[in-house]
Image (cartoon, rainbow, N blue to C red; front, side, top):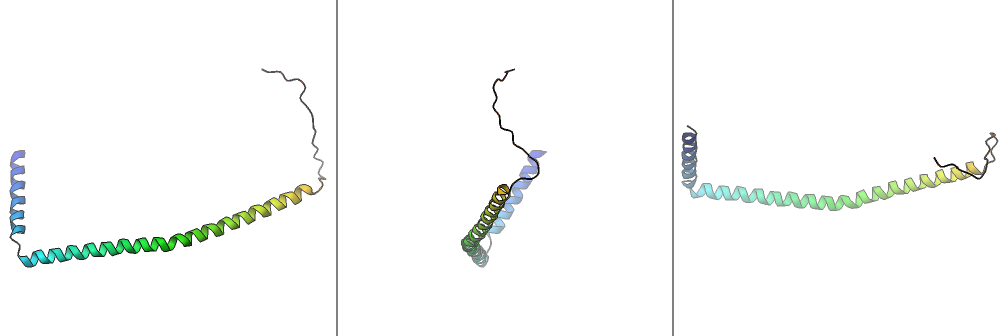
Length: 107
């Protein structure tokens, strides 16, 4: 049963192969031309994508550098604000008690 379906499929493929071999020279030339046009179009599409990526890399790099500079400026401003805040005398009653550990029991 299974062997019969394989034979039938094989016969169909052989018939299709013979029909394709019997194709005229005009059909073969047309097939080669279509394939050539598709290959050339694919080549130009890949070339376009490559050139586009080369053009976009400096743009992305410039945007990255701009964001990095903005981040650095924000960090320096925050540091300056922190230093100004820490230089102000504390009036809120917080005290720092300094001390030394004399004896420590290890558990």
